[in-house]
Image (spheres, rainbow, N blue to C red):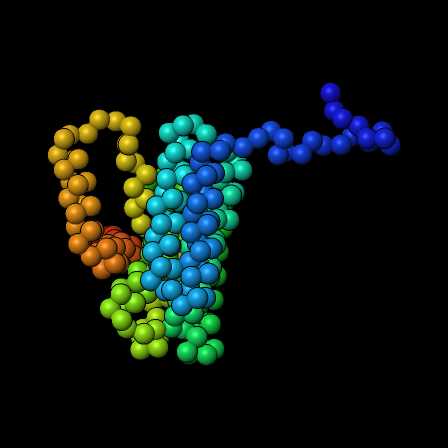
Length: 252
């Protein structure tokens, strides 16, 4: 029976009374915190820590969806919360880190480059949310925002680790940052890896492969991770070129 106030009008219950699933939203909150920490760290000049925080946000963001599916705790609230957290961690945070580290030395060119990235992330997330029902689950249209953030944060991490100042490569960042933003709103197709079955059994050699990956990453995390995500970012244009070449040969 609906509640009524003193004037006799029906009053809707606050949706929050229904409750929310705690476990997946804890991971989302952790990702949001990491993105916020990245902004604060960059404001204090700790750019390497800021870049690492964005990568931690990526890990937590990847876990929240997996955990929700494995535990059957998906919800509309979780999906919306995840999108908002992604905008902070992979949209605003990488742009501000790059701006504080290098782009601010370029004046208007710097903040325009940073804004192109932020706008690209916002548009990418909006398009993704509106195409959930019709999109191919195995592919993303446009570079995913966590991967774009990894390119920006990875570049900052690699050069900060080597002692290079942002002002020395400001113009390089003025190319990398907006390029990552434009890839997010492009029509290039990227493999989503959502078809991986984490609940099924795998051969023993698969575990050895996982161990090998951890060993390789531990050798030089900054360079290895940047190389991996740069390769992934280039895989979209490369795949598109391959498809067009194959179609051209089929017609010829």
